Image (cartoon, helix red, strand yellow):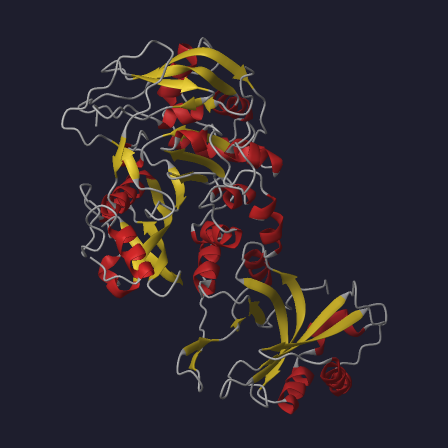
Length: 131
Length: 468
């Protein structure tokens, strides 16, 4: 069966998700286990990326890159001149928008509960015995 | 003088002709668009009590003053409630006062319009009355002495397009009045965005659902939501993504969640009659691609709005939340859960996923959860736009959910039938410093308590039975 080529999960999305398992205090960031990754070029919009830098958790993004095996592609910290630093914004853009996880899972760092990713769509539904 | 520039020191007025929509949300829309672009709009609209019906009638046009022309163009670049904008050259309660005001309009402001090189067209429009070709010709003749055009007439693509508008909406005993209430004359600046309604028509779209939002309303919601280029927009009940498409069109980046596995994964039967099963390309991402908006798509997730997975712990994620939660009529209100006291999830082989059992999601909780989610995840100044179903006999302002971090901006009723309506609610997130952190959503009225609270009343009234 041909895998759908239309759906993926981006790292910008991963950055916004957390574990909501009952009783968990430190459910962020979720641990990524990626079996299938694709790099897909998208339009670079420096204004948008620059805006996102203040919204996302940078350490969670660098951690996510490491988890999927893309080490040393991002600086440890956001540079002070990030708004005008095009090279940095391009790197951030590549990490946030152009790397897509097709199959894999997101795991709660505290409870170990796994949320599967299939066809690029993370399934964040808890089971009926967990709510 | 370049065309369409108000001269220094001269205060231009602008006539905006409005589309005929029962929602009457045009002022809310224009105010919201103005705020998005960073300027304030003060519109005074005259409400008249109709002589024949006794009901309040709002005028089908408004005049904007104290506004820069570039801001009028910005409003029109977004509005679906406004049909067209004109530089107002004259107005009057009768024809002679109208002609006089055109004469008095500064010549420098009229600029090159009368030059031989400038072709022109004069259109005659009656609001509330059809203007026969005879009347139209008569009006054009009457205007000749105050409009000394020297250029050629071009009805297809003129350099200057002019409109004479006569307002006959103040009906007397059901018939248009003999004389118009007001007569206005202006030079057309530009049209609004109603052409987008055809472009994004649901009839032509492949991926639709039972409750995909009407295109005009989804554009309106986008405008009320303050969405602009680079906004991050979330729909927690995304379905087929119909609400996110205009947001993407205007430069927003869109993300959505839904509990329904089939809709998210392009499975199950199509909502279109006779279309059979959904095809692989019936996804939100593909729809945006078809519209040339692929770059605006972020992601969709399988997610329960009652127990969402967004990291709202001290982080503000979204500029806007635009959504249409299920009312229990055409879409069931469900969340993950079981009726059993201690549900047991079966052990599955690895690779197989469990489809969690779903249980009733009471409307009261749907809206409380939505407001709590919005209060946590919106940036200060960000907006929540959603529909609230209401049994009309039950309605009072107490029915509208509240949250101390969210300010109610607008509330517009759309009547669905004799007993029910839905209200378009717009709320704005306040800056956190002004309110306590532990605020929670509340609903003062009990109309939404209990499962199927809206659904039962809706179908009871439909069937003519007494509501339980």
